[in-house]
Amino acid sequence: MNNFIRYVSAFLLAGVCFCSCQEEYVTYNDAEYVMFAEEQSTNMVLADQEYFTVPVASTVACDYDRTFGVEVVDKGSNAIEGKHYRLLSNSVTIPAGELAADVKVAGLYENIEPTDSLGFVLKLVMPEQLKFNLYEGSDQTKVVMYKSCPFDRNNFTGWCILTSMLLRDYPGDNQSYQRLIRTEAHPTEPNTVILRSAFYDGYDLTITFNPENPANPLVTMDKDQVVSDEASVFGQILGDNHILGTHSFYYPSYFNSCQHFVELWMQVYVENLGESVGTVGHFYNILEWISDEEAERLQRENGM
Image (cartoon, rainbow, N blue to C red):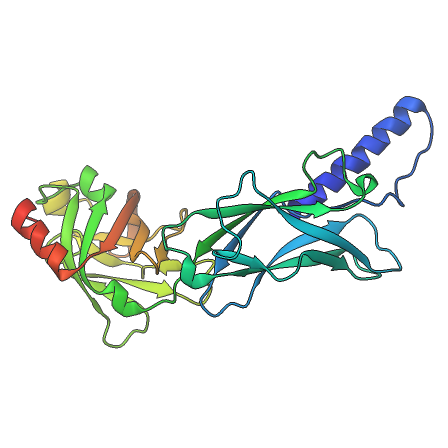
């Protein structure tokens, strides 16, 4: 609704300017305009989801129901109606006394690929005087859809390619900023995976997946995990010879259940007897889970 509020605020501001310039008192309290609440509506398509909604808003409430047509605009659309999505109705009704209603759209989960970037444009069919002319295109919105797959921890176990900005800046004994590592489900912690010799040999780490909100699939990393020793990576000891890591508190980390990868922002720091010595930095890392066959090929051809 932020865009809607902005549009209405701009409209009221224009009204104030008009009043001051003309030295007349003009009120717009009863001006009726209808529009999509957002310029772009981004939506997940879930396996067990009946539909998602695209909000429509009005500047005033009326004492009667208002029904408007909804049509798909071919220009700017690459999603196919009937294949990727289906409108549950070709109209939307704002009930009496209400300011908003929803266009309901069923995303056709089985026909959307994990890598698809799909969208279509909706347009409200209504009398010209209801269009909010101060904002061009307020009677249209771009609807973007992407597939969200159910979380299965098993998809994040086995062989994994780690690509790390930490290893680029502090390689230690690594010959590359990429490593082929083994991962496994934690035996006692739910939704947690162990990364064996994650960044440096001999130092295991754990990451935890939070699948409760598919729209915000976060990954976290417990504090004070030992990433490596200082001597072998830095060539000197500044603290207690432990390089520590946790998820970054500046940049969120996410996982993708469809494509089986994790974007991990990790804060790396050094302490001495529990007292902070300093932060090394916040490093971006990608973990991509691959098949046994792909791992064997990488070991054979690339020496990973």
